[in-house]
Length: 160
Image (cartoon, rainbow, N blue to C red; front, side, top):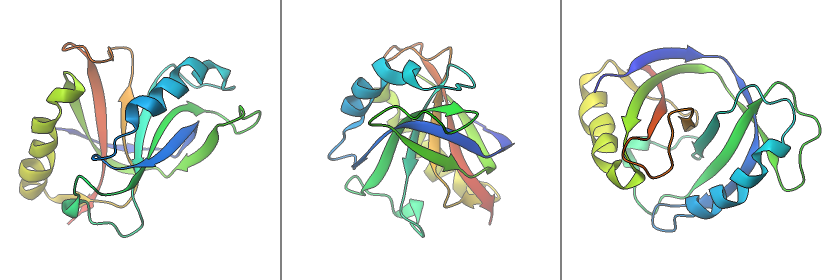
């Protein structure tokens, strides 16, 4: 599984977020709250939904553990920040270099892909993780919890 290497521009996001870990996973609750309300957001740039993970500054992703606390976002990209719906927040995603992996399958089958990215691809590449947020784009081919579902996984990178 080889990624495409892509430089993305900065993005303005509007959505909801929660602090969580894998052992205290609140992703389902977050998306159950956000998805019915996503079209309340004004100035949408597209219909994609972004699932983003924000880690503390200086966090070494190679030390990630199931109990690592991070901020999880369910968001959409907008052209401007005005008329933010009640209960939603804004986030300015810094642009930069990303390794983009295409994932096909269900959340339950994501483990081998995660292991490949961090235990096979990164050690063999000329890159290391950067400290910017990690995110997935749930686009037109995303089918929640379906084996044919596809999404793009964006991992921030920089040269070693």
